[in-house]
Amino acid sequence: FLSFEARQLGKLLAILASGEGDPVRKAEFIYTDYSRMKNNGEIAKELDAIREHLVEKTAEFEKSKAAVQDKMAAYAVWITTLDPEMRKVAEYMQLVMHFRDLRKDPIAQVLAIDSEVATEMFRRADIDPQYISFVLLYEYMKGVEYLKSIKADIVTRASGCIYIANPDLTYDIEHCDFEMAVAEFEGWVKHEHDSDELKGQIACRGTVRGTVRVVSDPHDDKGFQDGDILVTSMTRPEFVPIMKRAGAVVTNEGGITCHAAIVSRELKIPCIIGTKIATQVLHDGDLVEVDADNGVVRILEKGSGVEK
Image (cartoon, rainbow, N blue to C red):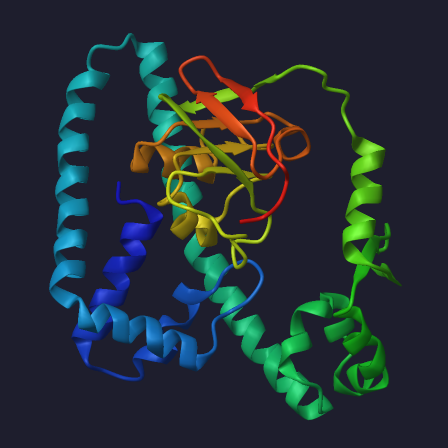
């Protein structure tokens, strides 16, 4: 089946080709990730970039469709070689991976609607929309007047805060330096690891050497260079532009049908998932060998930890 990214490209091409309605409005949910929705100016810029390279983008989409047809033909032959029980496993895996992608569209559509509602509530509360992501759902549910009453607190959260979840689905919000809070939390869950090797699950085979770049926020790639090794807790659709430049991907979390595994297989780059502690053990600037044939990351040379 078409990958999530290829399907999104197909939808964008269809939106531009239809000539009906406001293309920015129609494309809103496509440019929504799990933390924010691009504003109208950003979406218009993305659409303009596709228009400027329409022939290349159309060819890219057609190439993706042709590749899927080839894979489907090969899969149809391969699956006949399996015994009945293994065939059930293979078909189940295919179904799970497909539905993991399909569910992203309604999630993105809901997030786009949520973003519009939040923007309007902030307008009525006279709060800058840049602070939308610092307000939690149960606070929105209390209404505009409540948001007005905590305006100063909302603005202060942008300087650093942590949210502590309570059993009643409310949160205690503590203002603090975010990086210090992360360091304290990692101290609680720190795993002792005195080896220069890190093991995980194989998601896409291959072996490559490169420089580690630990990225937690896909909107800040920390100077990521082509061929660097992407190390993160887990990947999401907004990580794809970085993944396309990566020599390999290593994650803390994930299983064989996770986003990192599926995208890495599509990009044909080595990927090791489920290491649990990659972001703790590996640091910016480390020279490593990602041996995804055996599920091992070897630290060849410790880096300075200084960002590029």
